[in-house]
Amino acid sequence: REREREREEGSRALSHTNKSATQRAHIMLVNSLAAEDTSGVLGRKLIQRRDCREHDVYIKIKYCGICHSDLHQIRAEWDMSIYYPMVPGHEIVGVVESVGESVTKFKEGDRVGVGCFVDSCRECSSCKAGWENYCLGVPGKQDSMHGTYNCCLKDNNNELLFGGYSQSITVDENYVLSIPDSLPLYVAAPLLCAGITMYSPLSHFGCREKGPQMKVGIQGFGGLGQMGVKLAKQMGCHVTVLSTSASKQKAAEELGADFLVTSDTEKLKEQEATFDLIISTISANYDINPYFGLLKVAGTYCLVGLPPNGV
Image 1 (spheres, rainbow, N blue to C red):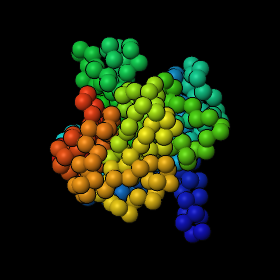
Image 2: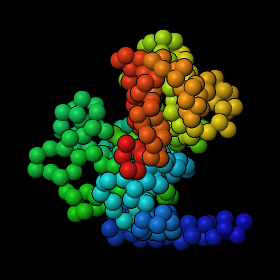
Image 3: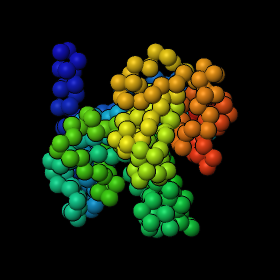
Image 4: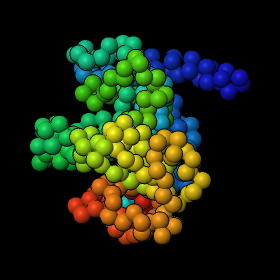
């Protein structure tokens, strides 16, 4: 209760600050949880959010999922550019509080979500084809796809973008998703990263079309793995969880999947050349080689887990 009172008092003070900031410079100050270095520790921090431009939607964040990529990035575990302070979070759901004057897709009170990117160049072949997540950028500009966080906009005075571990976010309407009323917001949040991360390869490699003809292995049974099992089962596939942890067998079977302990070399050998598709969700370092033999000829091994030191 004491923490709740502190948050309420902070929100009232912040509300006053927002008004004066908006009047002065068209920005708002909001509370967030930010990493300042590679320690992985988050602390409270006031960050700036822009007021709505012509096509912007200002969203009051209700929930934000925790993705393992948040941990990788705040600890600088990937070979990529890292920018501090960093406010992680790209599984964002909330309610629209205000919109820019030319917004047509959303209105105040709408339930919305924001995923892994918040803008792109909009001019390259990928963007024009609807593949903005593969934005190539355009000649004469440095920025391509704008990640929701840990993104420095070189073409906009090195502006840092901050994610969903915060009170609110302002995003162009073209990069905001509608959340149906039938789906609770807290349930929708993980779909914006974990959901699409698993849905995309399942769909791309034929599971939606072939369903019962597909034997699918889901390697790793954390957040991504459980999402993958649920989606593959809904597509009608025969699904097997591949895991080093025998303790997860009951949970996998409750979702309708078979279970294979990968340390059991005899069981592994029995499954050789039987899988059409294996999707690895493993985010730790491991030896990938023993699992290629499980694939049929022309089978597919798809990596979505991104171990910190490569494969």
